[in-house]
Image 1 (cartoon, rainbow, N blue to C red):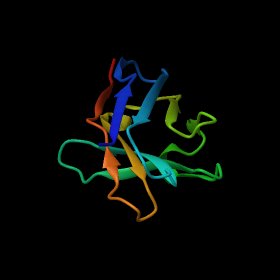
Image 2 (cartoon, one colour; image 1 turned 30 degrees about the vertical axis):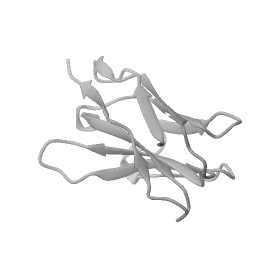
Image 3 (cartoon, helix red, strand yellow; image 1 turned 180 degrees about the vertical axis):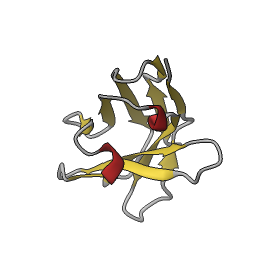
Image 4 (cartoon, helix red, strand yellow; image 1 turned 90 degrees about the vertical axis):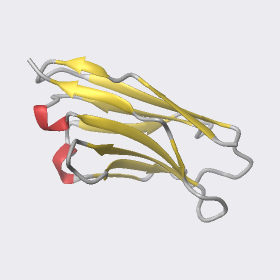
Length: 117
């Protein structure tokens, strides 16, 4: 049973920073990519950033230049460094692991990020 455990959410003022972490365990399949999604109240879940096992990255336009996704050398922990946070970044952030079709994608439980003064 694959488990994704997220940490690092919280309350921060506009312009501040947070670093989210997601650790994957229990997988018998290789992880092809790890992603961060977010969902704000009343909105659909959206892909924020992703990183492949080849270290290719992608970002939604609204976070480019402010957020950075990275992973550890084992590829089982992914980070999201979030700088210059804005009120519109407020959402529940979810970690996602993509096994390239060998198994269903796995999801973390979500961590709340609130940007408010």
